[in-house]
Image (cartoon, rainbow, N blue to C red; front, side, top):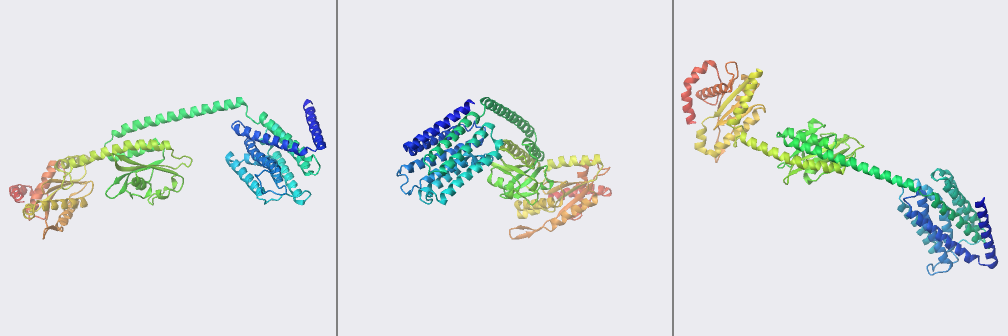
Length: 614
């Protein structure tokens, strides 16, 4: 009841002031005072909401405050035009009054626009830019004279007032429809403000009555003052709620940081353990598979592949796959093609998210099922040894920057391990092979042959041995030189690599003599293999300056059986068969036979002489 009395007292005082102003003919100056007070009020709302934007309950209030800035600017332009300041020298016929119409239009539609924007994901600066463009367009239109001032009593002026009233009606309907977005105090205040604004528009329409426009300004000032009080009293968040919200946010931030730190610690510990395990592995195939599988587990990837670089051919050969098509092993990708090729060419990591990986697609593998791919180079000592890639098919997961950093750390240690193992295998290979032919040397041949022979005896499987040497090789060296002789030996070794299987053990027994162990091979198949070697050598042609010559071989074959169950006996029998082949005219294949043993003993002295000649 007390509040109602204050309202009626305020309305009565305002009516009395307006009546006195009419009698004294000072309504115009008082209207300017009211308009200046309104400018101060709306700019106060703008400053308050802008500085309190983090504490406002609804973005609606922030957008409303932004609109207040431009409304006050338009009203300030109107005051400038009233006093004919040089700011608008081109205005004529009172067209500056359009600024007042524009300001009222901005105020009438402020609620409508603000409620609309509050339900969209717009940033405040974008809303301010939009309002600024509208305000600048209005100022330019009035300043340039494109919009002449409607005359009193004209249809144009009536249409302007109808538009202003329609904007208030739209704001009222929007307020009713979106009432859930405001608390009851704000909703009630804004509704009353719209009503007061509607009454003020009626008074502005009756502008021919002296004092009507002053009354309209007073009512509008009153309504927006109510809005300012309502924002201050109920538009802000409760301080305690805001404090607890900050505390909860701080707790969540601390909890997230702790979880991330624990995860990082676990990842580093896993990395340390994996590096220790990796350093203990000295087999290249096992090492590469371990590097790939542990990398996938380290970054929680679904699969991956690892390829080693062939610098001469500038290509990458896939050596290991993890949860991917096994057919990929052994395939190659040239530099610059595919994910692995691009990483190898640029020596920089690549992370790709989303379906459609472009250059990452390879015809040998359906990459469509992978959603994310991360690939890193394997470099050590400034040299590129390979490329490691991991993939993820879960569309909700993407590799993060932390995942990339972890994989790069792993790749650095993996590359050093790969380099060490490759150097070790190369040293072992050089120690096991003959430098001229690339075949097993005498010591390595016997180690491999002994293991294969023992396995055949234990598993009761067939096994054959072959011994062959080059006929009259001493004449080749004496006639054409030792370099040509080395060329002949190298060519025959290359032929052996083509004819014999990977499971067969081929070695340079000494000088021009070769030895072969053929596991799981009977005597007939061994003889056929020896015949292919003999025929292949016979068809070879060698050049020595202007001379063209050929060579032949003699070979002996023996088979493992109950009477011959040791490697030494097997080699001795194959060697005796070789003597028999040489004694029978060379360029022949002989199989050891029991009945020829005594004859072979008689031929031994003669064969030793033939070898000396050879």
